[in-house]
Every structure is written in C-alpha cells, then in structure tokens.
Image 1 (cartoon, one colour):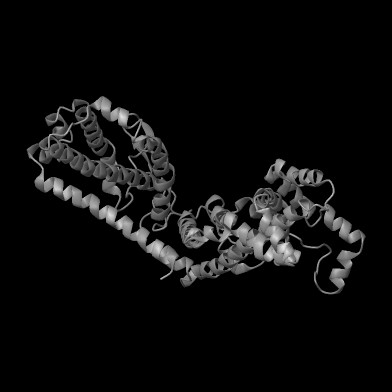
Image 2: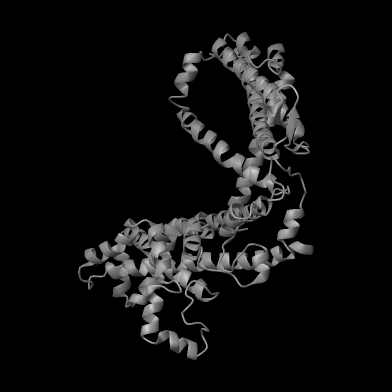
Length: 485
C-alpha cells in the first residue's frame, strides 16, 4: 500500500476512533458517575451545582429550557407531519362568523420539510451537548476525588481566550457552516426524494415522498421520463469535457504566457502584462455579454466573415448550411467557441499565479541544466512544469471543480442564443451546451422541477467531492516536497 492510501486509511480510522472514544467516555461517565452526574442526564446543571460552578449550571439550564420550549412550541407543529409532508391543501372557506372567505388551516409541504430538518439539526446538537455535558461533569467529579483544582467560571473564560482560543475562533465559522451549508445540503438531499415540481407546488398543492423514483428517472428510468437518462449522459459528458479542457488550456496558457513575458528577450514586458491584467479589471459578466454579441448570428464577427468571403467558403465546403457562422448557436461550433472564449477570460489569472511561482524557481537549478546542455524545452518539461504542478497542484484541483460549476461562462454566452434541436434533450429541458449546474438552474427557475434539480445537485456534489478527495490526497500525499529541496 502506497503512502497516499495509508494516509487515507489512517484518516478514516482516526475519525471512527475519535467517535468511538467520545461514546466510550459517555458510557464510563454514566457507569461510574455519582448521583449528580446521573442527575445531569435529566437536569444539565446538576453536576455543576454540586461542584459550585453556578454560572455553568445557569447556562446549561437555560440551554435545556430553550431546547424544551423550541420542541414544544415550534418543532411540534412540523415534525409530526414530516412523514407525510402535509395532508391539507390551501382552500378558501366561507367563515360564517366573519361573513368572509378565508383560507383554511392548510399545510405547507416545504415549510414542514425545512422546519422539520431544522428541528432535527437542533436536536442533534442538543444530544451532542447532552453527552458532552455528562462527560464534563464526570471529569469534574474525578478531579474533585483526586484533589485537583477545579476552575472557576472566570478561569474557564480566560482559558477560552488563551490556550483554548482556537475553539473560540472556530465557534462562529462552524455555526455559519451548519446554518448556511449543512442545512441547505440536507434540504437538497431530502427534496430529491420527493415529487416537488410545478404540479406539486405548495400551498395550493402538496408534495410527498417518492423514494428513489427521481434517481431512477435520472439514471435512465423508462416511461415518459426516459429522456432524462439520455440527457444526463449527454450533459455529464460535456461537463467533464468542458472542465478538463477549460482547466488545461488556461493553466498551460497562463504558464506559457508568463514564461514569454518573463523572457529576457521580450521587450516592454510590463506593458504587455498590464494589457492582459486589464481583462481581469473588467467584470467578467460584462466581457462575456460583449463577446456573446460579437459572435452572435448577426454580430460583428459574422459581418466581417461574410464580407471577406469566409462564410461563403465554409458553406461551399459543407461546414455550415446557413448564411452565417453559428459560433454560439450550433452544436460543435458552440462547444469549441466556449472553450476558446474561456481561454481569453481565464489565462490572465493563471498568468499572474504562474509569474509568482516562476520567480521562486531556484536559479541554480536552471543554470545547472543549461550547463549540462539541456534545451529550453527540456528545462520546461523536466524542471519548470514539475515545479509548477507541485506548487499549484491544489489550485489546479480547485480550478477543475470550479469549472464543473462554472455557471457564468456557459449561461452568459448561450442564454437566449443557443436553442437545441434535439427533441430528447428538449423534453428534459436540457441543451447540448448545458453543464449540470446550468441544467439544474433552468429546471428550477424556468420549469420549477425542484425534485430533478435536487438529484442533479447531489450528483454534482458527489462528483466534486470524490474528485477533490482523490486529487488532493494524490497531490499532497507522501514526501513530495523533498524532490525540490
């Protein structure tokens, strides 16, 4: 087993060992704790009162009361309906008391799903706090039995500003991740197992659980939805091709451009560098919209091509069948143009990164290679590129993942320009130039097909996660740094 595999296995083992140790400590506390430790299972502040830590006792008591009130007055309105996601539709009912037509007490499937999920997260956190609290009060018992000093509340606060300051700093970021990342991802996963679409939109209609039906549909289920399987394969294939070529071309292009500008024979390198950096200063969506208009069927580029006879030549040899070159409106043409335009947009970023890395390549290595008779191309292949890959490897991985989800380039270049003639794709609201993320966006914004969009979102998440874990483990695993010492 290589070092990378050993590192991955060790990380997984370490995680499960930590989880096992956490629950083992709870079992020990429950079995060996005194009456106050056991009473802490019911009243979280009991153990702290026994050890005269009254401030902690008040905090834990308030926390416990808050969880109970949350459960009774909020969660109880939604969690019992989680299994059905509601049964009462919104209807207007004539109220004899007010002599007005009013809405009934209806169920809202999405609110039930969202607030039930939020309740589950709150309860999960409460359980972790409950277990950790039991362990803490048992540790206080052991310290008291051994005659050790038990910190006062002020001493505990001071410790969170000194030796435990990392915990203090991480509290808000972790809370933000849970609220703005974990809960939305879980909601996305749950919606994928429902029939939430345009025909089942609350509150006038309710949606419910359908199991793995949506996944079967996406991966080639039969019936009226068979086109989703076909569309998924087409869109996934283009997504991976796009991510590969857009990442590779901008990466290599940025390095070559940086080498050219840093070459001693290049005149006025600062001026050239400034010209390329100016493309970064202009907002990307502005540049993309302008380029889309330039290459439109009636745009300035087509006008120039028609005037110089290029359009007629391409029509005569059978490459096009229209009076214009379909740069962004026909399959094949659009795919190639999107990648080319992305090179123009993305290379300046990579040029700046490559410039900083190339300035740090040891000059003695380059001079030694030249003295040994190495040609410029050999130096590039044997020294420059390996060093660049070592330094920028993690950034290259994130660029690939970013391009899988590169919504801006695809959407801004093809929206209202490209129309598919493939009926199977059209039946699934997809286009040949769609990435998974743009297909997902169209399903939600234009067709309200949230169930299939959620399934696609899960697929994108799995692809990006697996690739990132494998690539990072390969890039940073082992002792690769020794190669460049």
